[in-house]
Amino acid sequence: MNKYNYSKWIGNKYNMLTVIEAIHDDAQHAWRWRVRCDCGNEKIYQPNKVVRGLIVSCGCYRKTRLGPNPPTHRESHTRLHNIWCGMNSRCDPSHVDAERYGKRGIRVCEEWHDYTKFAEWARSHGYEDGLSIERIDVNGNYEPSNCKWIPMSKQARNRRTTKWVEYQGETMSLAEAAERAGLKYKEVHYRIHKLGWTLEDALSIPIREGLSDLHKECIERGADYHTVYNRIVMYGWDKERAFTEPKHPRRTQTEMAARAT
Image 1: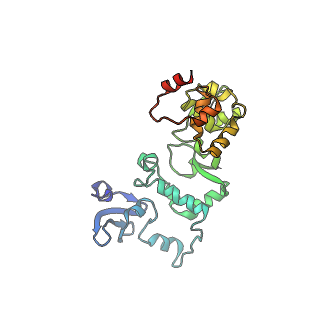
Image 2: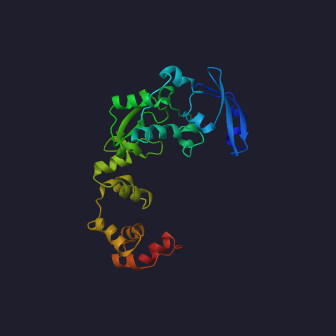
Image 3: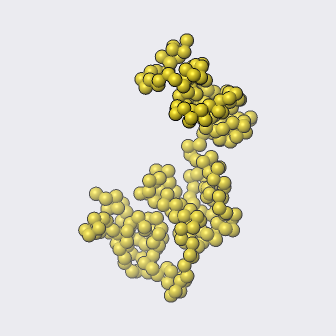
């Protein structure tokens, strides 16, 4: 059974459309919804477009609000329009990211179902290329009071999966702590989660002299950087041995440590 053929959808209202029944389109081998608009008209639409807010009425909304020849925003495929489309897609319960958005009840507010209103808010609140939309409360909806524009580099720092730490007497993301310590986030993350270092050591011990060139050498010699790094830093191997000894896929860390002695 298709996910859009469950009875739970019947009676749900999306914008001006209420789901009446699911109908199988034999020609397209897909399910469609018969919906009733607030004006009384009934139409048959693709369910995902109704859920995502790409269709908000039977067509009467644009006619009554914008007149018989409504102007288009002429911004399709622009960066801001793509952000708006992505925002609506993430809140679709059938989307690939539904577990983190749509299925958690996160929605796009009714006002922002209209792209022109979203674009007006965006530009009046500092939008420019290079910025990304962020929800202030990660459990809240996409709406004017809960959104702001931030640099792309900071987007990943406000997620439910963000690692928060206590550093220098403050609570901050691990990425911010690494930045403050003058270290690369990936290096600090690797030290903690792969090498088992404490947070204090990972943020206070400088990168070994010459180790920044190690990655380049690994690329030149076709070696796996993390394997070589692990052998040198954790097991104390000399560099040439770390590069040349074959990697044994079944060798445990205990065996690796024993071989280092």
